Image (tube, rainbow, N blue to C red; front, top):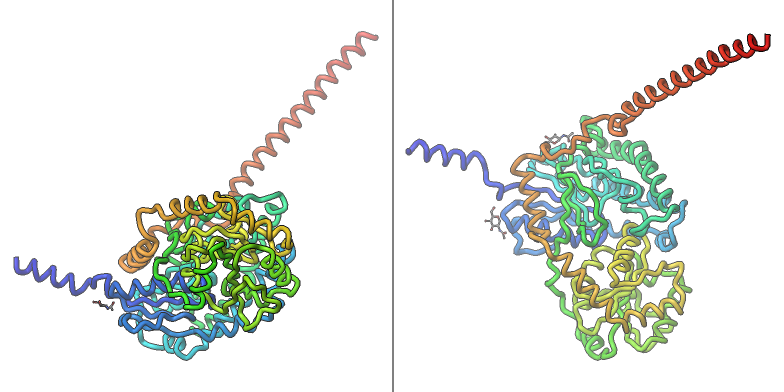
Amino acid sequence: MCSMMLWVLFLYVCVPPVQNANVLFLSTIPSFSHQVIFQPVWKELSLRGHKVTAVTPNPLKDETLTNLTEIDLGYLYEIIRKVPKDSWNFMLHKPNFFNVFIKDIVINDMFSKLHEDLLQNPEIQNLIIGHEQFDVVIAEWLFPTLGAFATKFNCPLIGISSLGVPIPALDAVGNPSHPVYTPDHNLPLRRELSFRDRLLSTLFSVYVRFFYHWIVLPREDKTVKKYFGNDMPYIGEIERNVSLLLLNRNPVFHKVMPVVPAVIELGGVRTLKTLQPLSVELKKFLDNSKNGVVYFSLGSNVLSSNLPEDLIEKYIKVFEQIPYNVLWKWETDKLPRQPKNVFIHKWLPQTSVLAHPNVKLFMMQGGLQSMEETINYHVPVIGMPSHSDQTMNVDTAVKYGFGIGIDFDDITVENLKAAIMEIMTNKSYKENVMHIEKLMNDSPVKGIDKAIWWIEYVIRHKGAKHLRSPSMDIPWYQYLLLDVMAVIFSVLALLIFIIYKLAKLSVHLYRMLFCKKSKTKKE
Ligand SMILES: *[C@@H]1O[C@H](CO)[C@@H](O)[C@H](O)[C@H]1NC(C)=O
Ligand SMILES: *[C@@H]1O[C@H](CO)[C@@H](O)[C@H](O)[C@H]1NC(C)=O
């Protein structure tokens, strides 16, 4: 009996409970809309007793979180801000065959520079050469470079994304993707594809893989070897070792896609209830807008004040003509020719604005986090998408009947004004947004609990090899059935050849007999 108890005690000491894991969370893309999705995850991990080191451009800086150490990469925002104004405006134009390919190169290049930059950070260098060990590495998964940390610590790797992931990342866990019904998430396509879209998506799905395997991976491999040492395995191998991909997708909102067990769709991890207060001035403006308020913000990446002047002029003309007040996120001190009914502000507590009962319409760029927020507070939208998943998100709003989409290139004073009037006066938009909110939130577990459960699962089992898709372990020619096809076609070709020869022979025989007969008859 006593020895039994000793055994239990022994086991308890030797098999540490999963609460004490050492977690390294690398969320590195300087975009607030990405970071707000990850913040609750590292916070919750630390609250559940894990020792968390978070590397992020948006640290929480919350002193009550005693199990959390944050490495601040805030300076990475400077790199993004240095991108010239013209590059962002180039993003505003409607996609054509040419610029989707260019955009992919530009974005990949930016990510590559960013990762090289942050690997030079002395605190990150300390992680690489230091003695601290980690039980799991969770890395923002739009780019594979930081997966090298997991190899360095000889621990499992989890990828996480605040939205979907590009095709090569799905390939790395053996998740099927199809150019027509699951096009690459960076392609600015609507839910239903025209022939032109299907052609574009097919070409892109081939291009993106060649570009990734021939340009991106070899380049990132050099970076990894430079900072982690030459004994590191090839980055393509490291990437294929990823245990799980946690994606902030919701199958109601996003286009349904088949997922392998290693892909977990979290479907929203934020609790949107925590509201930052409105400033006195802003609250007064919203309270006094009895006719309703149109809230206009293009998110944190595309700045309104950087828009082309003729476009700004169109917005101003529209706002002058509508019988509603407008709250515009405008990032400089002065808006030229500011109409009386327009209130500008450099930064706005978006959830608090959307929660205000007088806010009736959100003019937005279609970013996923803004969509989540506007759906949560039942505010219909006018979407003006510019890049990555925004076109799809706006099209989803149109499909569910809670929004109208207009591409930047198509905006005119007349159609924008008509769209605003339609949404402000037609009740169905509000009803539809309430409907989709109910659908999206009807789920057995909250996204955050799902994320934590799966992370702890990987810690408990030291990876998730048993969930790996079998398609990962077959060569590409077998996956594409090339060998099987080759045999089937060869047999078919042989059969056709034999039939052809036989037919030829029988015609020949028939002619010989027939001709001989007629000849003998004549004679
Ligand atoms: C920190 O972790 C310990 C267990 O390792 C836990 O008991 C404690 O509650 C955690 N503290 C906070 C503030 O989350
Ligand atoms: C693959 O993951 C395991 C743990 O899950 C780790 O021990 C190993 O070093 C990793 N290999 C590579 C190439 O990253």
